[in-house]
Length: 583
Figure 1 (cartoon, rainbow, N blue to C red):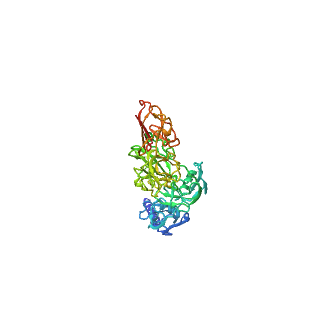
Figure 2 (spheres, helix red, strand yellow; figure 1 turned 45 degrees about the horizontal axis):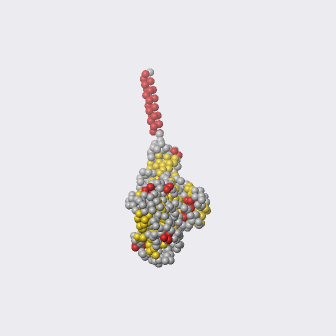
Figure 3 (tube, rainbow, N blue to C red; figure 1 turned 90 degrees about the horizontal axis):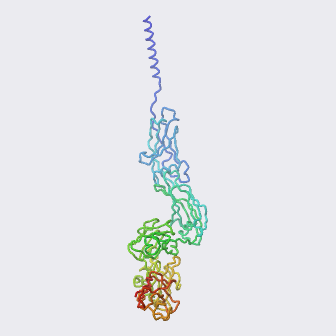
């Protein structure tokens, strides 16, 4: 019995081993997959912007023959700059498909994000990576190179109005709104927008700009701002004309595109932009409180066509090391400084190291400035200098009487004459450093023209007084009168009838605008200066602090502290607009 059981067990074990070996031998053998072969539908793509949403490039590849259901195989299509070995690829992933496609916009975005120029062919390397769904057993195809030219993906600009009327009475009222679609759709970085404009039809030959900024898609302009674009586009105030506008868009890498042009018809007006000169000199020179635009001197607006509302200037005394700036309006909202002749919004303080009379000029359109000696002189055939600007200064100069004020005396003959503020003729540049000459055919009290007509000759040759008066910055005028004599008239002159010009004593002319007289004067009594022997002649009154004025004021007084009726020396200096009395 034991023998029988042993034989049976051995038979069963042998049968089991034979069966097991047969099952192992019958299992299928799975081999590794093969690398996919990539094919591009085209190797050169230069799609126009109109095809931005159309498929322009497709890739397909062979089956890598993994031992799985092919619908679960993972594929990654990578695109990178040629030669970069796929260190910064842009990819698309698909599952179970043997192809992938790209629109023109997708290719454009890849090129833009890599900083390549628009309109220039760019080489790209492409490859496909296959794997199981869990990323195991990855295979890479041989790279395929394609060349792509990016199109100019411009914004589309619109205007809310095609015709506007700018009104000086409502400058802050919204006049027009420009809006636009994004440029460079799909680009990952910031796109900066700038609104540009120029005269209609000029193809932006003299383009001007209004900054907008990144990721902003609308810009409203007030009536004042629309008027500014009209004036800057050579539409004179009070006239109607068209201005072209377009949008410039720039990526962080410098790719630049321009939108379509929209035109707006604008009826313009003459604005009255005003500029002031606050600084450290104000308190010490009687020009208000230091660094206070609210009481700072105002610059003169150059009203010539082409520089109106752009060029401004002032003649002013500044102490040593004075610092100052220029503000648009009587507040610090908009201020200008600068260095090296370049005017800059919010720029560095201007500075003069030496005390003196200066001419300060700015041009807010060209962003230039100039600081030079402030002076005025006689030139012309009727003057001792002749028509020779280098011979004007110093012997034929007017005196610096105050801010925007010159007074001078000279002997006139015939041959015409002008006033000039430099030792050379104007060169026609209309730049900030140009010479300014002044003249007019109008008589005494007439408005002056910058680089205008000559003054007419005086009817009778002789010494005359001329005043260049820019204290009214809206109307620079001149005054002229005979300067053959100067008298003191009043009730302070010992032995002379009170206030009687015909018998009042004449002063002696010393030259350079200076008159002198020595007379016995009565302490505490009054007098004034009269340039003639009858009332109605040009006269000077007391402006206080040893200054004189001719447009109304109190009389001069002999100091009550003087001892008795003694000889007094009285000096009038018309060039400096001062007077003194000593005993």
